[in-house]
Amino acid sequence: MHSSGPYTNAYRTSVDNPERFWLDAARMITWDKPPTRALDDASKPLARWYPDARMNTCVNALDRHVAAGHGERTALIYDSAMVGMQRSYSYEQLLDEVANFAGVLLRHGVTAGDRIVIYLPMIPEAVIAMLACARIGAVHSVVFGGFAAKELASRIDDAEPVLIITASGGLEPGRTISYLPMVAQALELTTSTATRAVIVKRRAQVPGSAADHSGDIPWYDWDESMVDAEPAAPVSVAATDPLYVLYTSGTTGKPKGVVRDNGGHAVAMAWSMRFIYNVGPGEVMWAASDVGWVVGHSYIVYAPLFVGATTVLYEGKPVGTPDAGAFWRIIEEHGVKALFTAPTALRAIKKVDPNALELRKYDVSALETLFVAGERLDPDTYEWASQVLRRPVVDHWWQTETGWSICANPRGLEQMPIKAGSPSFPVPGYRLAILDPSGHRVPPGTEGNIVLELPLPPGTLSGLWHDDDRLVRSYLATFPGYYLTGDSGFVDTDGYVYVLGRSDDVINVAGHRLSTGGMEAVLAGHPAVAECAVIGISDELKGQRPSGYVVLKAGVEIEPERLRDELVERVRDEIGAVATFRDVTIVPALPKTRSGKILRKTMRQIVAGEDYPVPSTIEDPAVLDQLSEQIHGS
Ligand code: COA
Ligand code: AMP
Image (cartoon, rainbow, N blue to C red):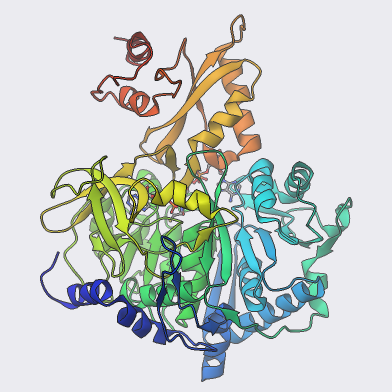
């Protein structure tokens, strides 16, 4: 770590005097009742931030900028490459839309603390719906539009929403995705009877409307509801009240409902905009992600608006909509200062346009920094992006649970040298350590479990929905006093952190976090499958992709091609196309421990062609040789 400088000073204060650090940072937020305390760790190992403060997230995102005379500034630019349309909302206009939609929610009987599931494509209504929930203290749970009915159903079951907000559909290159049949199917699959109403946004591009659906619950039309909407006033909530639940993949098929509070989240978001992204009022931030992921929550919706910046909501892909110049066009047209994307998007552009000829057609001089996260930034992609853009490419590492960066090169604080392959240093507030399996700290350069000493800073998960026991079991029990990130890595002698990959069964496909356990449950449901394992294997474009290994039931005969097609279809139907599940290998047996646990890590090593130790607990070592021979032919 640097021995002196703004970063080191901030980091030291955050560790030595977190009360002072986080009370200072809290000044970036407008409170109804300002905090007199930062940390409340009375219910250790869980922590709460700003326990005596009150505020409203929507007021911080919108009202306060309008009240300060900046209502004319652009808050949101919707740029759809899919429909060839752009639309800007000033802060004043966005506030009007949000207050009116919050009024619609009140009319439907929604009250503070109620959950609302939002299942929408990348359209402004997604942002409006999220902020409207925040305005009245309702808790939103956004489900990524690429997830199919069953995934939606499991989230509805867990969140027990009173209302679902959805659209007639989304647009993917060359096809439309009809959401309404998926929502209807999800509702049939759920045991939750709580849903009272569904509001549908009709789109000219995707047929389907409220009128097409009937059934147990009433469906309402967004546009019609807004005609006579009464604007709702913001509700003051406790800083510790939940703002949203965002489901993310864990080791098992059951997603984890990460809960984010209001106050700590607002402070962390505002702090990160200034000190990590170096973006302030009137400047443009574009996170090329989806509102269904944490990156979308934090850096499409909340953080840019908290600081009065402009955010870009892009409906399209980096390539093919229409070409590999899409990102550069947006930077030029909207004057983007900070772009945030996933390495996979850069690899997609590089593959189509390796010499970045498209880039020459655009003036990208507004771009100060390219930020990347979501998966490991491989040095080749880093070098390519740095060379073609000729500006800093800043890797930063975080996860849904933390909501913002654990490690970064905080450009607004101090511009420290970048090392390829490293997301640089722990961000102030995060006390990072690398532990060996027995919980001892390892020396620099040695790989181990990346953990964070408790308490975690503001903005990180304040619980798991309905299941704080699971939070303790999943993250806090392995190494008491530490949060287990699930990633492994090392710190070099200069203090730079290197994140090498997950040490559990979570995989990251094209920047989308997925559970192999969820896919295994789908494969196991096929009548021909006796048992199966899904592991993540390396993929040149998507970073990783899932690969399935199945053992057939005794006596079953099925063409491998047919089985593969049926399993692929099942995963698309039950999880969604986004799983990118295509590889199926039929094997005679799976390597297991004597207690029946499938040795997935050893399988990963075999498939990758790495040396692997034969686990001492293995049931039948011959299965490993068999697998290796089948995969590598020797
Ligand atoms: N709704 C419905 N389907 C979706 C979807 C959505 N919102 N998003 C993706 N899909 C579908 C795709 O159409 C594709 O379907 P197909 O198998 O029929 O072709 C499938 O899911 C796989 O999608 P993906 O892996 O995203 O591939 P892609 O070819 O559509 O796009 C990238 C590739 C690299 C452009 C894209 O994955 C990307 O931009 N990734 C970055 C992810 C990200 O932002 N992560 C957040 C961290 S920053
Ligand atoms: P998600 O919760 O979807 O944001 O996914 C989080 C996971 O993505 C992390 O636990 C890492 O495995 C991976 N990840 C995210 N950002 C990075 C990064 N910059 N470098 C390496 N891995 C990353």
